[in-house]
Amino acid sequence: MGALRPSATSPYPVRIVEVTVDKSSSSLAKISFVVPGEELEREVSNGLRQASQSVRMKGFRPGKVPARVLEKRFGEQVRNDVREHFLRKAYQEAVQEHELRPMTHPRVTPEDIAEAEDGGLRCNFELPLRPTVELPDYKGLAIDSELEPVMDQHIDNAIDEIKRSQSTPEPAEDGIGEEGMVVCEVKFRHGEEEVFSREGLRLNRQTPPPGVEPEAFAEKLLGAKEGDEIEFTMTLPDTLENEEARGKEGTCVVVVNEAYDLIEPTEERIFELLEVEDQDSLKTKVRERLEEASQERERGRLEGALLDQLIAATDIELPEPLLEDQTRNRLAQLAQRMESQDVPKEEIEKQLEEQKATAREEAEKGLRALLIVEAIGEKEELLVTNEEMEAELASIAERNEATVDEVREYYGKNNLGQQMAIEILERKVRGFLRDSAEVRIPG
Image 1: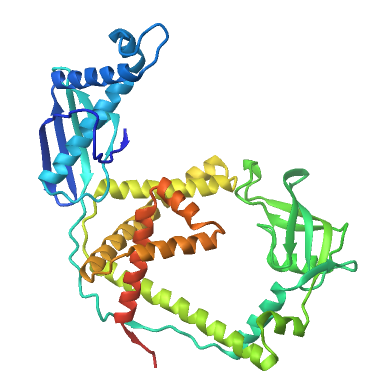
Image 2 (image 1 turned 60 degrees about the vertical axis):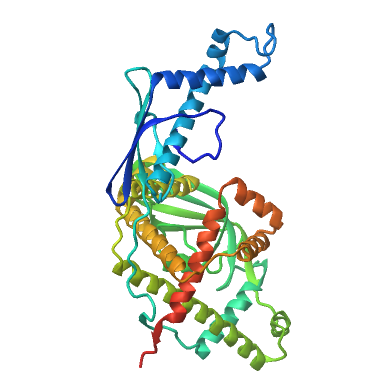
C-alpha cells in the first residue's frame, strides 16, 4: 500500500480495537491491530452507500443503484479505502497514546495485512522511531586550518583561464594550435569491425576519447585540420555493447569535420570585462576573488570536518528499516544515472552490487548527520523562519530563471518543503559549529 501518511479527517466513522505497540527496541516500534469482520463490513457498506449517492449510471436513478452493481464496480476501491483509513487510525492512536516519535512514515505492504478468522482485518507493521541523540561537547571543537595563501602563480593562472574562457573560435585552415579544438566523428574498431561510432563530438588536445593514451592524443591532434583522419591505438572501453571487444586492443579513428583555433581577447577587452583600468588593478581584483573563493572553500571544509567529528563521537541506534530504505534509494539513483548514460544493463547490475556497502555507509552517515543537526538546532534554538524559507525560494527561483510562485508550487506539489527547511537548518548548524570552533593556524 506504500508509505502510510496520517490523515486529519476520514469519511468513515472509524472504530478500531486491539491496537498494540511493542517498543522493545528504542529505534523501532512494532504496531499491530485487529478490526472485527462485522465492523469492517459495516464500513464497506457505508462506503458503497456514499458512492451510490453520487454515482450516475444509465438506467438507475441517483441513490437507487442495486448493491450488487455497486459492489461489482466500486467494491474493490471502497475496500481499499476502508483498509487505508483503518491503517491511518491505528497509526494515529499508536503515536498519540504511546507518545511515539516517528522518524518517518511506515511503509505498509500487502503482506502486512491478513484476513482475520471472522473476515475482519489483521495488520502488523513497523514504525521507525527517532533515536535519542546524546550529543557530545560540540562547542569549541579544535581543528587545524588548511587555508592556503594566494600566490602570484595562482593569479597568473587565473588570468590565463579568464583569457581562455573568453577566447573565440576561428577556422584553423593550417591546423589547430596548442589551444585548438575539432568537431569530429569518433570511431572505435576491433580488428576490422567498427564497434562504436559517434558524430558531432567536440574535442581538444586535453580531452582524449576513453582508452586512448592522453600524451599520444595531444601530440597527434596538434596541427589537425578539416578532412584529416587520425588513428590511435587504444584499449577498448568496458562499456561497449559488444562484450567480446571489451578491454581488448583496438583502434580509435578521429575524422576531423571542422578545425578551430581559439583566439584570446585583447588586454583591453579583459580590462573592460573585469572593470579595471590596468594590469596592476587586474591582478588586485583577481587576487581578491581568489582569496574570497579560497576562504569559502575553507569554510565549507571546516564545517564538514567538524560535523564528521561529531558523527564519529556520537553513538546513535538507527532504525534498520529506514537505513535499508535509504540505501535502496541511493542505489536506485545510481542506477538511474547510469541508465541515462546508456550503460549496459549487466554493467549497471555489476556496479550496483559493488556499491551496496558504500551506499549503506553513505546512508548511515547521512542519517546520523541529520539527527545531529536537528538535535543541535533544537538545543541552540536555531529555528528556520518563514523569512528564511521565502528567501530560499527566491534564491532557487533566481538560479533557475523562474518565478517565486512557480518554485513554491513545485515544492508544494512534490512535498519538498520539509527538505528545504532541513537544508536551511543544516547550513545554520554548520555555521554555528564553525563560528564556535577553535581553529588553529599551523606553524
